[in-house]
Length: 264
Image (spheres, one colour):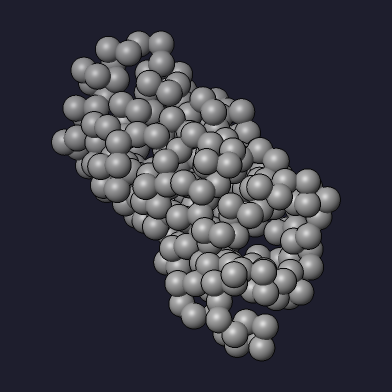
């Protein structure tokens, strides 16, 4: 029986209602690109998605993403995301109205394969924290991280403890004026180096340092890339010198020091 009373008569869905036959049909009529052969071939996943999803939240998301884009992404998600992860990860994110803008932003820029990897491997509670970062910063980050670095670096970062995500990663995205520089660091840093920086330093210091550097410092052969290579080769240098220096020194002075050392 349809969970939404009166939807056959065109009435708006009550807040908190999940999909029934009539409300699902109304959604498809409004966004016909959602219907595809791939969706029809996976009725169990589609049914699980609709039975647990909030009508108002899904409608809002569909309205925020171009139909062509949603129609291209949805079949890939239905194919690649496991049924348990659809219910336990994707649905809670869809149903949180405060995340709609961030989800829409990522759906527009993020590769479907990356979405599938994230949804299948990262708990909803952790994704919910990260999605509260500014949507523009999230977009700048995910659009600039190389595809091959997602599995190696970015997904492991998303699986870090919730405290680190809430008090370091999200504030870093909030405070850094150049999120593409966070992405460049993720592209060139060895995972252990990146994790050490995130775990041992305050977000405000990391953001100030990244903003104090110059764009060409993040290019191949630039100051940041050279430093990251040196830190990867000498792990004691990171632990014993770099982290203590970053903890107590003015980020602008540290940025100048990094540029001078690299120039030599």
